[in-house]
Image 1 (cartoon, rainbow, N blue to C red):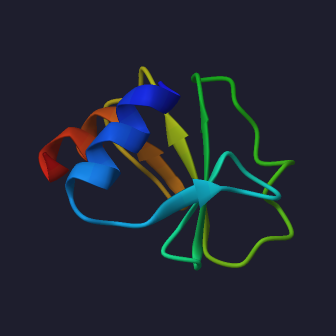
Image 2: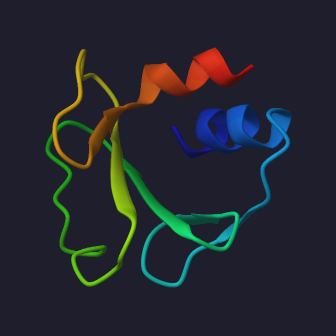
Image 3: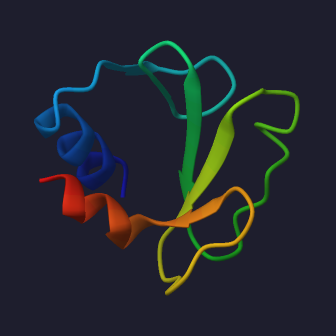
Length: 74
């Protein structure tokens, strides 16, 4: 999951770093936490501009984004 996510973002020219609260910090602004369908938002609840990237989900809602959508960045 994490490898797919970082590969897609780096291919799109975005700067990706390891995050303090989530898994990744993109462009110094957006925090992303990667996980499965049961992943909760406790790690990123205090982070502004934070998103859960969920594997095994067909559509997004709120700050939950399906992992497969990042494939369109390639």
